Image 1: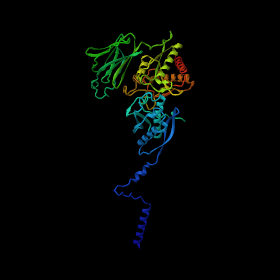
Image 2: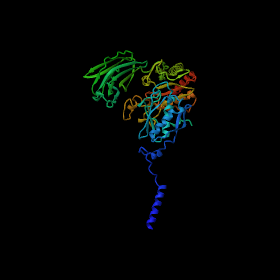
Image 3: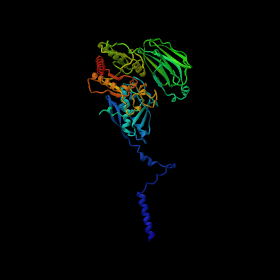
Length: 185
Length: 341
């Protein structure tokens, strides 16, 4: 009798565990590899991330909402965000900024972002006024610092090197911090 | 012998492969000069930067240049014969087993400034023409205030192109108009231009022309779209700027410590004039826009860091009336000078 009771309890426990316990490991594929289900669920890369980009508009910067692909780390996400700014339709009409392309973006542990831009328009006078240049610089700086609290300052490089100006007026050889007074209220 | 220029201990250790620097000497591989309306520039091309001594002889008619430590090696094939009224000749001389470079000054020579530029490394000596810069003389009995107007762009750099013309021409026209108006008013201003024609000048050259002329005020002119007027001053010590001195350039001399001497090095001169520059900017905005409470925009303007004067950049909308704009600028300058006196 005792043996029968214990057997029934064991079978019942096994049934309950199979219904509510941890998921079984993914089934092996025919080729023997296992599906990486857990990793996919952790990062949810399919859902877009809402960000704010700062575009030159009407002589000031305007905050605009945008969606970018989620990335697995802050550096990649910042790169995605800067690329989204430069590809944004609102940038098309912006002198200086519209001619820039992102080569690379790196973060260091002390809160500095290094934004490496293409030389397509850099250092070439005639691409914009001093004000156009200020708006271009702070469009990038504000977009990065406002979306990522880890980014405190931004260094702008051209083709991987420190450069004096983007278009002949504004000294970009020093790091920049955000300037929200340039944003239209 | 009076030492009038300090020693520069620069970067010799920072440069890889600089054999002479390692021996604490200097090698001069070339000597060039440039004659400008307001000053003469002598450029000593170095194999690599190192400490040097620049002194003046007792009668003040000769500059003497040598290495601070170690040998001065003169590899330049030829020394230029200048004779432009400011500098007569440059010659290499040996005295007591040590090599020197003599810069023989002429009667129009005035103040001398020296600085180092990098890549390629060179020592630059700027000798101003006379005590004060050119054209408009001040009325008798009052000391002239030298105002340097810097028409932006020039030469190959045409700037922006508007329906009204190229920016390089518009800025030159505005500078000429301001100069002409100031002359008419006999306001005690001695107005000079960094360029009087369609000419390419680097930002360093513009600042050097102003500094050598002893300008008290520097106004850079640029053009923008529409009817906007923007007046910029150099950004005041933002937290992101290392060293607490605006405009300092890392490629110039990498000193680690703060000192009065350091502040005077190239690219950092404007740090001593920030209050004056703001004052000048406020007067100009007031006269140009009618807004008495408006402040100039602080920005890291590349053209201003090396200017040793109250300095602003004025960006004028091309749709504005140019005569009225020139008048407002003259009034702004006059108001600032009057209040400073």
